[in-house]
Length: 196
Image (cartoon, rainbow, N blue to C red; front, top):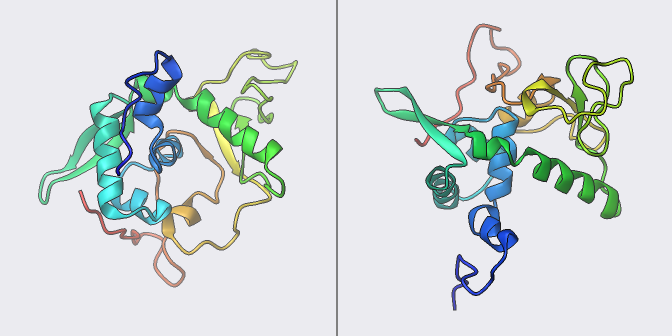
């Protein structure tokens, strides 16, 4: 018997939210969108999700208004996926879930560290800037003003080009650019197969 996708008998905003982001792979797709992943092939390379599942999750997130599908190439047609205002509102949820996993699951090392780009200070537990000398002191830092840096738990030599690109410090939401493989000219782009 297949599991249903809704919680029809639950009168709860958490249940309604889980109908949108509660399926396997969905929050990881949203996480990657914050990291600057926009193209189907990049999601596929980084997540390792089955193609049909990834396509279904991307479509569901577009249908729910979490992601916006934008055409970036006409021939052949190719789309990218960008967080909407509703998608951006999920940042505190993802940050809190990541902190919970790091703090509560034994043996979990921080994969990434998040810093306020304006002052360089690592964000506090609630996503706020803890630096007393910063004009944003004590306030939540919006995703566009956050720099992501590698943490101690991150594989320093990942196999896929997306993970390699994410090893460098970078701002959230900035579109991902790949580093060329060793031996290639710096100007040569890395080609990741794109399914959409």
